[in-house]
View 1: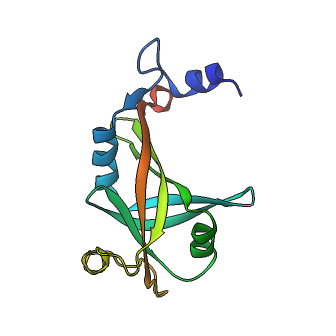
View 2: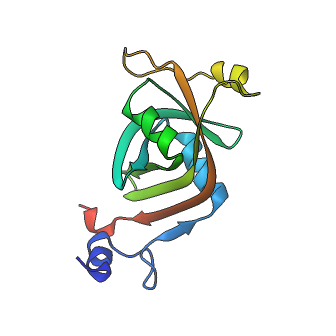
Amino acid sequence: MTVATICESIGDVNEHQPFEILGDEQCWELLGREQFGRLAVSVAGRPDIYPVNFIIHNGVIVFRTAEGSKLASMAINAAVAFEVDGYDPDTNEAWSVVVHGQAKLVEHSPDEDELERLPLFPWNLAPKNRLVKVEAFELSGRRFVAEGRRG
């Protein structure tokens, strides 16, 4: 599939650019509205994606996890990507924000007590006793209207 085919299938926001590039402030605003995202990790050339619920606190993404492959992957390679997206069926507006950053296990750090008090709880019954923060070094976001989806 070519870029032109993709642009034709989603419709154009304007004739020159099929989507709006979002600035950092807009990206943080959209991230702050959501509670669910996808964490991408990569070890030995093998990428994995994990769904996580999260909260934004002081410009940092924070989530809870348990011991396991996600935590082990971040210990081996702390460079991660984090993606959040949304779609409004009333307006046909869709958006996506991708954060590239460093994942850090929150333990023995000055902000540990503060982060532990955040209203961040697992969505399932599995215990998630480890806090992780993702410090962003790059944000990218785009928004478009999916004209082809209008009924």
